[in-house]
Length: 63
Image (cartoon, rainbow, N blue to C red; front, top):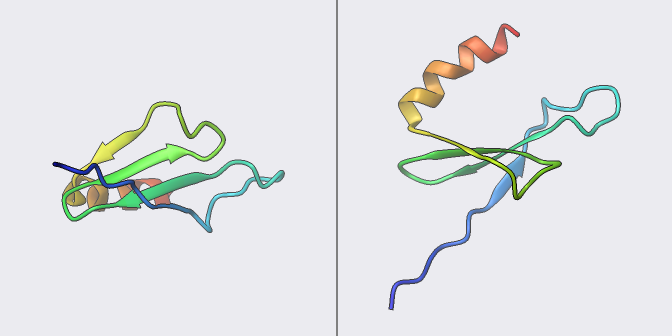
């Protein structure tokens, strides 16, 4: 029997906005980085490879 592992989500400490509700959450696996909106946890998610995530971070840090 194959068991689906539940992702463990972490809220970014750098998100917040003025109301504290503008947060993203990350879940890490060896092969993927999962990203979702903390206000809409059942909504769409982004899934990136670690290399794509590493390329994205410098861009996001400038915004």
